[in-house]
Length: 107
Image: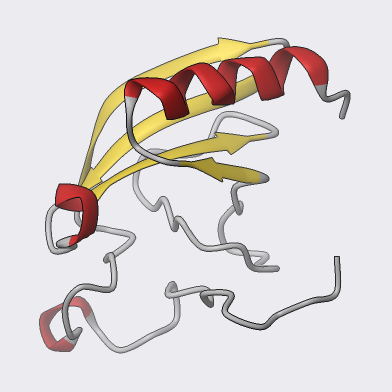
């Protein structure tokens, strides 16, 4: 898209988890609350334990199943981990929107 105003950056290579300032989510400190494949894409609801907004919850869509050891919620170009292709508000409404996105957006 080319616009980066207000976009968050990849936190995979940020400071070590022990020195990370809140509320930036640590891509190694999370639990997966829900994971489902919809139309060859993966929807995950993840809780980042060191993040305070929305109680750390994030709903993300990935083109392929992400490894469960590192899940960075930020959009970035990394060869070490995959980036989500979309994020939605972490609510029931957001989950429904993620399912609709997967059903209607070809990849």
